[in-house]
Image (cartoon, rainbow, N blue to C red; front, side):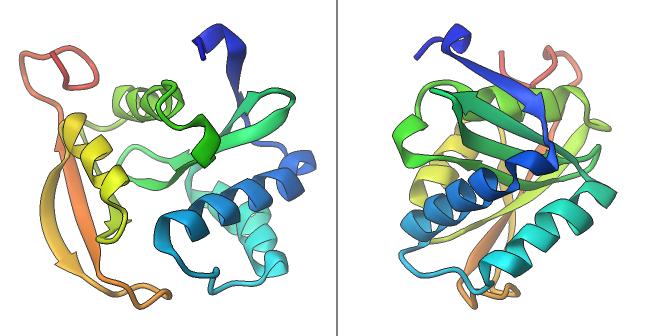
Length: 158
């Protein structure tokens, strides 16, 4: 799928139902367990909490939400791509935009069980800085950090 076949737009609450459905499906497939939150709780978080601290964006393809990200100048809070749309450049587009708009470094968490995400982040210059399990899923997680290299272009990948 070429970038011309999908687009990134700012989040709008009219896409809440589609976004939460994609987010829950993607996370449940990656973790192998049901979400710890109800649909209503997750919708409230998406509409009321997340936008207070993060820029939230969606990826659209085939007239539906296929990805979402939430980031600010210091961290990526959320980055989910529907399983059927992974490997098509959507996640990389989200990541590069967050890197370009960062303060020069970004942190994020992913779960140890999500090996696909680990490979993706490491491929894009993120390094493991800690491990733990302080999350509502009670699963081991990994904290990553990316730091812009002095001589490299935006995105930190040569």
